[in-house]
Image: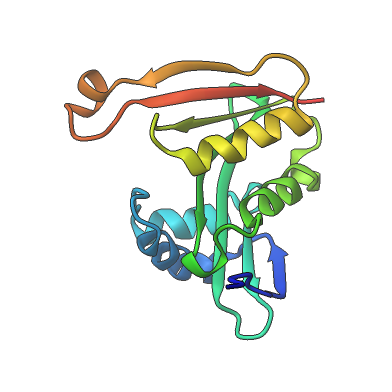
Length: 168
């Protein structure tokens, strides 16, 4: 049985009017942590140049979103905060397309490394970022615990592993 989805997508930077829909997308993408709508509004306005979304060209449905920012103390580092892909677009390489488009955007000129945090059991995120390390990386990617399950989350969340990828 062929389960391939033939989606025509528009990839673009978000704007403030996308914030509420981004919040709803993230809410549909369990087990991602949801933020307030206000936080997503700020991401879509203040950080729009370092975020990217994907819409279905036919009906305008938001199918993917990546939030990121350049670290203030390390502006050559892009920290990828969250990747959310709607169920109907998973397994189609959309997360990688969004991330590649973001890395090639003007706002990411001069970025020499990517950082993100991933829980140990998030196979989809590990696959995405390991593919970026393999295809765009220059040297050894580094993994280390950034936030510990007990120390930082009081046992309420899993440890977050910092994954740092040097880029060409």
